[in-house]
Image (cartoon, rainbow, N blue to C red; front, top):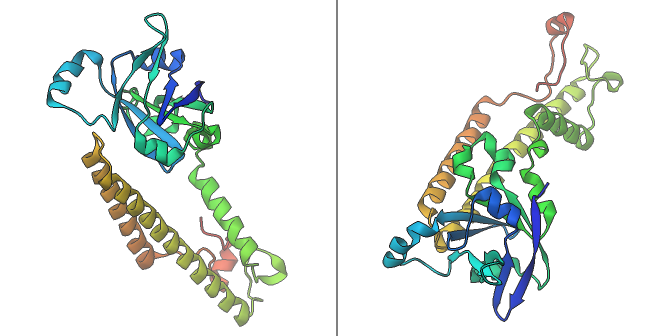
Length: 267
């Protein structure tokens, strides 16, 4: 799943690592290129080439934050490999890597993100982690379809709230009691409240990430904050729409509807 790995080393307060040649060749990175770093929830490091080495002289005249941006350096002279001689201090504190720990790499262009961004946008980005399991969420085949999500959602609520229908079937009938119908309404209410709570949790998580972005310097800080604000707004609108136009997960069928046939589960 990951394309390659290397050993992370600690020298004093500095952390250094070589970049596998496969990554260098695939991403067309070279010694002297300026790299930007970003931490993702203490699990994955976002590494992105910001400037080619031939454009760096002009950038150095204006100055750049060396605590966030690092050059790719040569290891072992001209015939050696390349890497980063000092991982940004804020990442050392966030990830707390150990000397000799294996570091795994995954180019963004080989992830499910290719469905949302162009290859041009992804070509300079590589994800790195000290635990390969943290990269699994980026695999193309790890992204569930809407049908799979809905199916799992229904299974979850069937386990938590055993359905009250006649003979334990999923089809209602005129034999359902008033008590069963009331229970159906209660289950639908619990499901709706859970859906709304889930959206609220997403908003709070994004707000927490937004706070981290606001206090750390990054070349795309404004763009990241803009995207986060848009996502908060989108989820907020989704929550309000859900409140207004909620479709019950389990429907109480009328006799006329039952004669036509149907299922109580709306997906």
